[in-house]
Image 1 (cartoon, rainbow, N blue to C red):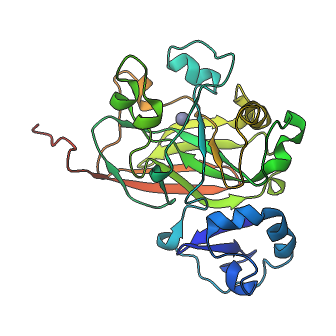
Image 2 (image 1 turned 90 degrees about the vertical axis):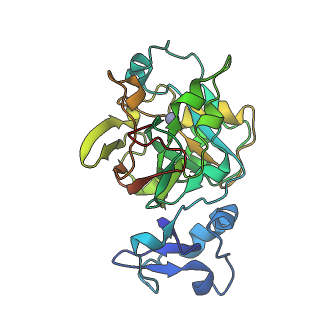
Length: 288
Ligand code: ZN
């Protein structure tokens, strides 16, 4: 099952073209708010079965918003692919490094993103949305608590992120628009192997990152087990699961996003984000 946010309304994608407005088709049994829909996910899945051939909504890219526009909690994982650990010149972690992207950074899959500086980097990631409250959940039970998977970009302002005596991952990765997610939320049963998905990103067509989620140091079930050992994970919460190698900050010379460029990011079986960058008021001009 594939669920999208069309004009701010939860929409079931249909087998052919188009989608079904969930609040309308259910006579208000389910909310139009995509975030609130996930709070009643089991009932929704039961209702939605077999209804994906009744399209009443056209899907145009500019109308598609983030499937999870306002999670209560956003978890993000650093250093979760061995080759990315190596390029970052860090040691392989014994436990997942965890930070947050504050929810105001979330944006849609085709939204333009304003660059606050000339040192913003890309990180394509698989993003997990929680569908059932998870507290002290074992790895074996973990996938049962997942509503679906999305593509995400963990955009990162490297100067803010790495400044000071204690690096500020959460702040440096939370400028407005720094967390595009989507384009749809895909339930785990849709994948042949949900633990091995190809992902990657390209800038104006040039491939920057390419990897497979089977190469994660901490798998999706292990992340859910470890996070839920501390925090209850709530329906609609999301987890950015880490990026493969190929980020700009690890290159020689370093490379960052520039105004006018377009970043496409994909996860196999989900779809593609397409975000164009525009210069913010403080973005340096070539003369500065
Ligand atoms: Zn990341």
